[in-house]
Each structure stands twice: as structure tokens, then as C-alpha cells.
Length: 534
Ligand code: GLC
Ligand code: MG
Image (cartoon, rainbow, N blue to C red):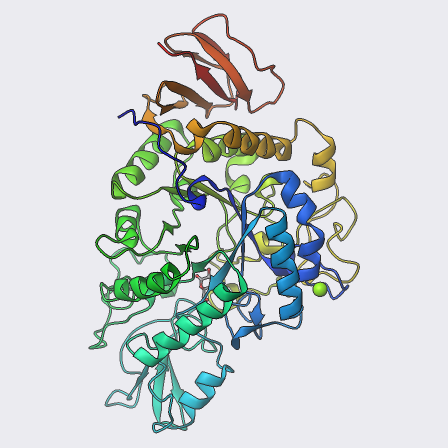
């Protein structure tokens, strides 16, 4: 399947994208919450690290019940974060550092104190009466159907002023917008243009798969695999999630962004790997980069990983550019699951697979889940659906820049606690250590920049054997072999032809020609080997 060298494609095909939860990155004013000025002061770090773009979780005015995914005004910055001027300064400074900026676009719902909802909920005759999803009560006066909120309980909430229910996929305070309404669509397009005109490089579309719900409000069926699942997952959400009509909304959003050359649309999509291909679109394009979390869901062994990677490549269309994500504000830290030694292997996997890598702030220091005492829990998911380990605060804890008690994040009280300082991963210590996982992330990104083959080359799997996951990247005559030892014990690896070692995850071997066509991989070691043309 060796493929001819392709020209450098769009910037997002070569970029490494770094997700930042702004509230936890760097505080500048001592209020315990990260802010725009704090992030601006850390641009040197981002530049040093070598990421090409940052995606910021919502920065807009919000009551912050759901990490800012409850938006009160799409076109203003929350006071805790700064101002539009501070945003413009940040954007300019990031662009000056050659770092692109992706904002979160949350088109599915607003906060209930958004002016649109206040108007819509005031009366059935208001100008925005149809901007949200309203329905009459069932005959018994109860909710219109059995749909559940993902955050627990019925998805319907009664509104006395209209004597109707409104639907909320998430919190009661996050009413769902009505994407069947052309005025609403136009209003979201205006929001996008507001930020695109300011110069942002694209959006990550939140909850893109749920924009349209069934017009007949048909009840969702019982989930046959409900046993042991949290209550919101005890139905199969066929009439609320991933409706075919939703694709038209994504195409609409894409058309808006296509009015601005060089801007990118990535997005949260739901469902299994076999659904992900649809989100690229065919005749009408949809997302440039539907986020793919398959590596996080995979079992951590060579055979499972080779199957996961294969299934994903097979599930996306030929024209699609792949995406790999290893962390995010909704996902449990993978370092807690696989441990630091394998986290290094994952870093090499992420940076050498064909596709755009995404990682979440803190992944680069191998950060683990931060224990959150019950009285400090913020996440509404945990409060409303307790007992299922759904709390997302452990990944959202403030960044640990150094080993001081507040980690260099704030001079005040951090909005969420940091982990105890002793032995905790922190940026400063790892910057001093040339073999830290941070140094590894940085070295891998540098290698990606240097080798077009790693960015754009074809992907050719080798047979995973003996706990070693291996593949080649090929670009014209160039070939790079990547071999990852998923076991903690040494494993022998053979190949054909002469090779030169480019990097070991241990960062302790010189880049030099290898005497034999084989190498003894140490436990938890991954290597990148350049093969001489045969
Ligand atoms: C998306 C966000 C998540 C949020 C939800 C509701 O899934 O990633 O953090 O809770 O939307 O807004
Ligand atoms: Mg602050």
C-alpha cells in the first residue's frame, strides 16, 4: 500500500494539536482560575514543547456549571478569563509564535440564562419561540416521551410560562437548541463568523452527533446491555443520537467555515469506530477531523492495539485524513490506566501513526488522575450520577508547573485541588531532566517536523508478535520502522535490511546505524528506525 509522497496538505494534517482547559492552565490574577493572560504568559512553554495548535475549551460567558459548556453569550469572554481585548492579545501572540487557535463551538445547547432562552421560554408567541426544543406534555401531564438526559433523569423539564416541556441532552440548565429552525442556524453561523473574523483558525464542534432529535419524538428502546450501566445509559439512544438528519447541520457548519480559507473543523462525534467515517462526509464535506478516541478505549496489549488501529483505518473513507486522540477533558487520564512506562510508548505511537495527533494538557508530563475529595467535586456528571466513576474532575485539575503546593498554577486557592506535591509529575522538574516523558514528547514532535514520512507517509502494518506492535511508514523511497514493546520484559525484534536508530522512548541511545537487522527491545521500550532503501 506504499503511497507516493504527497504534497504537504492542509496545515491540520501536519499539526500536533494540544487541548487546553483554560480554567486549569495558568492563573494570572490569583482568583484560582486559569485565564487568558495566564495562557499568554505560557506561550513560551508551548513554543518550547513544539505544538502547532491549541484547542481551548469554552472561553465564553458562562455560569460554569459544566466547564463553560453552558454558554450565556457566544460572543463575549467570561469575566473570570479576561476580555475580548485579552483574547485578541492572546490570539495575536499565539499566531506570532506560529501556533494556531481552535475554539470550542457548542451548537447543541446554551445555558438557561442565555438571552435566546429567556426569550424563547417567556411565551409560545415570542420571536424565538421555536429556537429550542419544546413539546406538549403527555396525556398524563408527564414528559412528552422517555428520553433521558446524559447527566441523569428525564431529558425534559417543565416550563410554567409556556406550559410545555423543553428538552435538554445534558443539564436542566442546558436547554437544547432547535437545529430545524433556519433562524437558529443563521444565528450560529453569525457566531462562527464573529470568531473567524477575529482570526481564529477553526472550531471543535461539541456534541456534533446529537444536534437533531427525532421529529416524532419516538421513545428510545431499552438497552439490552443495561446491566451495571449508569441510569442514563440504560436506553439505546437511537432517536436522540447520531440521527441521519444531523449530518445536514454539520454540513451547514462546514459551509460557513469553508467561506474562510485555511480554517479547520474538528469535532466530537459519538458512537463506535464504525460510525466515524460518516462524519467526514462525501459529496458534501462535514468535519475535517472527527475526533477518534479508539486508542483510549482499546485494551492495552499488542494484539488489541493492532486490531484497534486496523479497525479505525478501515472505518474511514479513502479520502479521509486520520486523527488520534490520547486525552481530553472528558476522558480518564490514560497514564493512570497504563502507567508511565507505557505512557511513553503511547507517546511514540501517537506521534508516529498516520494522522493528526491530539493530546490534553498534562499528558506530556505523564499526568495521572488527581484525587478529588468529595467536598471539592465540581463535575455535575458525578453529582447527578454518582457511584459510577464518571467524575471528570480528576483530569481537569490545574496544571502542575512546579513542585510548590499550588504547582505554580495560582497564588490563590485553586478552583480544583492539585495532587500532593511529593513525587508528582511537574513541568519544571521534567524540563531539567533530558530523559523525562516531557523531553520525549518534545523530541517526538521535533522528529515529526523533520521527517515528512512520519507526517504524510503511508502506513503499513507489520504482524504484531511477541507483545511488539510494529508498523512502517513509507514515503516514496523512504521507510521508517516503528516497533513498540507493550510488555515490561525485553523482546527481540527482527527486520530486513539495514537500519539506523532514530529514537528510543528511553532517550538514552545515540542515533546511529544498527549493526544487525535486529534489536533487543528493553521492557516498555519503543524505537523508531530509519530503513535504508532496499
Ligand atoms: C461535550 C463536552 C462535555 C460537556 C458536554 C455537554 O460532550 O465535551 O464536557 O459536558 O458536551 O455540554
Ligand atoms: Mg484567574
